[in-house]
Image (cartoon, rainbow, N blue to C red):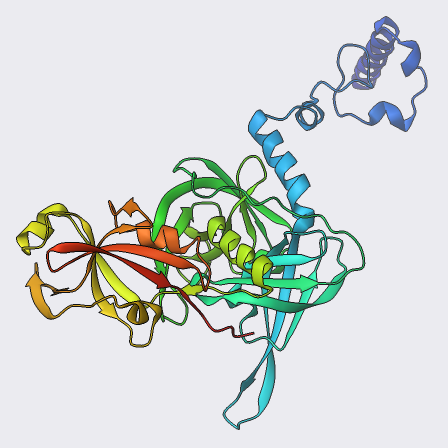
Length: 393
């Protein structure tokens, strides 16, 4: 009986299976059970070849406006962004020279191969190599540097026209606007990161600690070692800054700094005029004093830049600008008084501490600058012919 019962249930299961197969609709395209019928793990209705989930395909054909902007800017800009490797020589404990290779980024600004980058990327190099986005590489020569703003202009000869980037306007950058950085962090070429302008007019200390870099653009777009010298772009693809430094030494923590492109424009104008880079020098150290502080110090009740030091032999010294005669303590801070109080520069009244920096950023070595100073209770106009910083190529 047990054997018959088992045989009965087996036949019943087989009969049910064949009945289900005969009742199921058979589409003409599925009559051939080829491997193509199994290309999707699930089917929609009776069509085995139509997958239910088509998310990736749909996403690939529809980007948000912001994503499309990122794609467009990168497509147009990354071909003009280059990798720069430099070779320098150092001495070991045994006074033996050994080569050290550094890497950074840069971007092409003219079809004939002129490239902007940071001075610290190429400083002290005995050999520079520029690698383009198509992996072709060329030896580069240095045309000029502006150490005060950590800028360098180099050039390669390719025998053809190269893609280049448009230099934008960094004077009208605002906090919160979108920025994109392209460079070669840690040697990974053509990397795009995005963020916003986090702050403006930051001052940071340089690697050699000789002088700070002032007026920097702060951004949270990821900047890492190897990004130095690469372009910081706005949403139109215009260069508004040059990625220069990060806070900390290990990598991006959301605080990076870029040199405003206006500084580079001034350097380039000087190069076009004279065939060499001629950063201007003035030779004073000054501090901004407000109306209230000026009154407290028994100076003319007018804001201005109070000269704290005049370098001997400088352009300011030759023109007759005067430094302090004595020092007083104001809020635990030593302040030199008795020197010239600059109340206007090139006819513009001094209303903040950055006017001189902004005007100097548009000047070149040999240019004239006019100071209106308050001296001994009366105002005088003093013309100063700016000096030129020596080139170290």
